[in-house]
Image 1 (cartoon, rainbow, N blue to C red):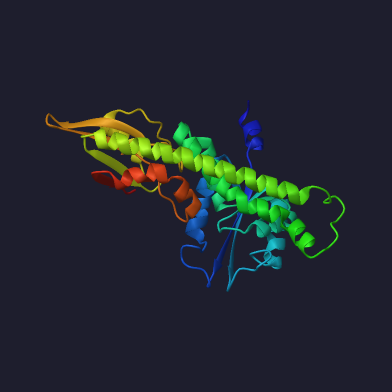
Image 2 (cartoon, one colour):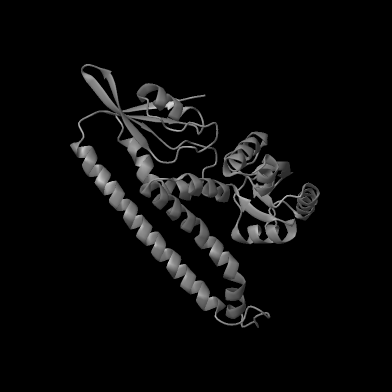
Length: 294
């Protein structure tokens, strides 16, 4: 396969961020966060073909960035042949739907992009459970947004438009119940993982060292240098999702367990942190935390 053919298969994306005076510093987009978003896009297998940073007092309720800026993004999408628009800020389900309809390309937000990377990177059973839980928590409110117009019409006694009559509302409730059952089951499975780890920790008398730091700061490289662990260490964000633990003999009388962990990142959605509690909990029980700073 030629490089040209591989390039054609990659998503070409326009990146969009909003800096609003009503936002906290954590919520705002900036040149730095857009640069990080581009790195995330490359990790996911996409390529950036343009970016837009909008400044407003407050986000616009319907389109988030305002009608004029949506038209500008749509023109850039068409000019660059983009098939994806990635927002650095969190979008509501309805905003995501409107922007996809008016922007001329599929629209996702930072959380959706990170979830896509996590889905690609998770290798262990625990990692896959955590990613699946985060995906369902992300999907549930968006599912509600997709079907919300049917619920509102039914509640107001309105007539459903052509193509939406039938079991739509029933299907919404069915889908909601299915996703909630999946969330409950995944949460239960991860609680079992935490229980087993707690038992193992009680039996373990060897000190534990946890390597932490920003994603792509060099944590896996450090673990490889110390223990010859042989972990793939590539120059991309979130290359490590599954915790890797190795034994390190510091001296004749001192041996420790040293673990690589998932990296930190700006504006990591709270539901992702919650889903990865089973992994992050290891940090709380470490005897020593080694912070890697690039």
